[in-house]
Picture 1: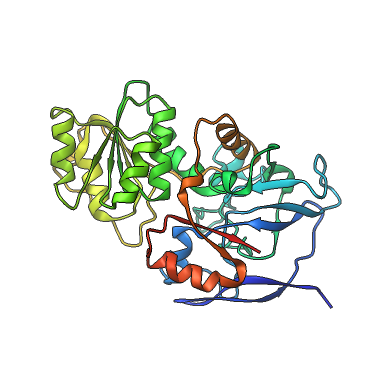
Picture 2 (picture 1 turned 45 degrees about the horizontal axis):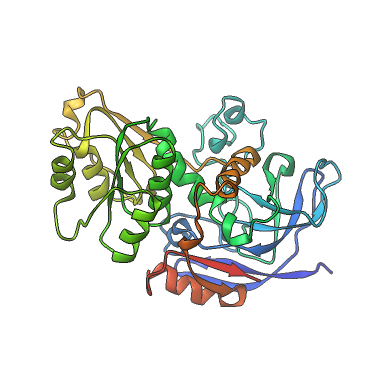
Length: 358
C-alpha cells in the first residue's frame, strides 16, 4: 500500500481542504522533493473561487522550496538530500513552444489550436506544492540548487512572484533613464517595482492605497507613490511626468480599471506590460488607444520558469540586490492551510505573502 502524505486539495469552488493522498511514484525523468516551505498565490485564490477551472481532487500550489527525496533513474547532475527550488512554470524543454524560445507556453499544439498557459502545470494540470511531497517533471530542466547560505524564505518568491514581477519590467523593455508606473503593489507589483529599478528606470511611480504596501514599495525602489483612494492616478501620473506620460506602465492587478489607467498614462510609443490575471473580458477605450494609431505596445507575460531562470533570480538574492523576505508577513503550518487560505483570500491583517511549512 502506497505511503500517504498531507495535501491541500481542490474539492469544489470555495472549498480547498487538507486531506491525504498517496506519495507519488517517481518516473525516469522525475524528481520527488520533500517540501520545506511553500506559499499561497493570488492565482490559487482564483482557483478557490472557481474563477479559474481545475480538476476536482487536484493538489494546489506552484511555489516549491524543498529537498530532493528521490531521483528518477535517468536524472543526472543532482543528488538526494540537495536543497532545490522549481519554477511555477515547468517547461519540458522539447515542445514546439520551448523550441521557439517561449518556455512558459510549453503545451502541445493540436488541431483545435494551441492551449495557452501550457507551461504552468503545478496546481493546474498536475498535483502541486501545497503538500508534504511534490513530483517535479523533467527534473533536469526544472530543478535549481539553492546557493549555500540562503534560507527558504529568501528564495520563496523566486518560483513565481519574483519571476513574474521582474518579467513585467523585462517584457516592457525598461531602459536606463525610463519612467515607469506600476499599478498595484501586491507581491507581484512590488517585485515589478524592484525589477524596473534593477533594469535602470530612474523614475518609478507606484500606485497603491494600503499604507504598509506603500512603505514597502518605496523600499523596493518607488520614487513616488500615488494613493488612488485620494487622487485620480491617471491625473497624478501625468502631472508627475509634466504631461509626457510614462515609458512603461506595468499592470499587476488584473482589473479593467487598472488596465485602462495603465493605457491612459503611457506616452505615444510607450508600452503597457500586463501581468494581471483577468477573470472578465477587457475593453480598450478608443481615445486611450489613440484609435489604434498611437504606436503603443501591449504585451502580456506568463511567469518565466526553468532552472536557468531560477538560478538567475537566486543570484539576485545572493548578491544582495534585493531582499524579498519583507513580503512574507504570516507563517502557517501545512495543517493550518485552510486557515491560511481564509486569511489570504480575504486579505486580512495586512497580509502580503504567507509561508507554509510542514
